[in-house]
Image 1 (cartoon, rainbow, N blue to C red):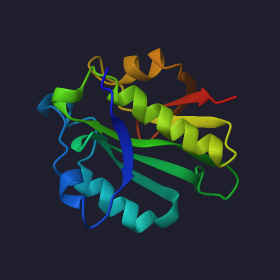
Image 2 (cartoon, rainbow, N blue to C red; image 1 turned 30 degrees about the horizontal axis):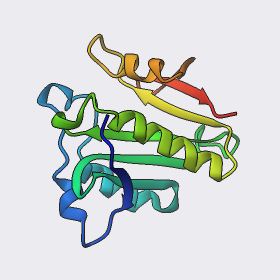
Image 3 (cartoon, one colour; image 1 turned 180 degrees about the vertical axis):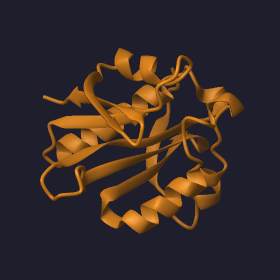
Length: 154
């Protein structure tokens, strides 16, 4: 496992580092680019929580959480969770993804949340196995054609 992982807010000083984070070519269909994620973060304001994942001073990943979004679009159901997770190919399998999920869970819990949601593209070679190993349970819902999983934080 990587030893010196940290999350940092994306600023003008490190945006190029964040934009350098890419996934393997065979994973590109499962996750948007960091550039698209940052554009969406800008549009969604406080509901988006983008962070660069560093190993020491080396960029190894990017995550973006959603915090208290209007899930059903009716102002009735609000949820928080992991929106995006991009891990550089050379860092995959070293604990970066687990670190990212734990960091988002901690932020949601710090804000009083008790559940963390995530969605993924259903595919044999997709990320479902990763999320299920971390304890995410299927909700039976879909969102935009993606499977919805939930992790109880309490």
